[in-house]
Length: 114
Image 1 (cartoon, helix red, strand yellow):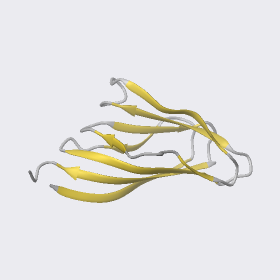
Image 2: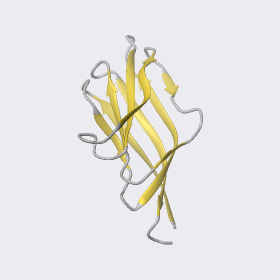
Image 3: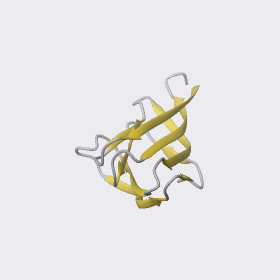
């Protein structure tokens, strides 16, 4: 089993859904942390959704719904690690464009090496 440590990051320049991370079809993933920072004085909010496949047709699960992020601050969204299964998709949506940055720390476990 190969363990790959990686991060996924986005500068949320729009207020539409953006894919932060998609688990490869041959892997599982452990999301250790999700950091969100606001680089303005204004503050904003973020929504984080988990899909059990292609977001266009899969079931959606709200992880964080309009979670507030104060201006010029950083918050940690996860209190415990989050496990994602094969082909699941993590999407994020900022309430306001050009204010938020998001970084997820990920351990990807490839199952082809078993």
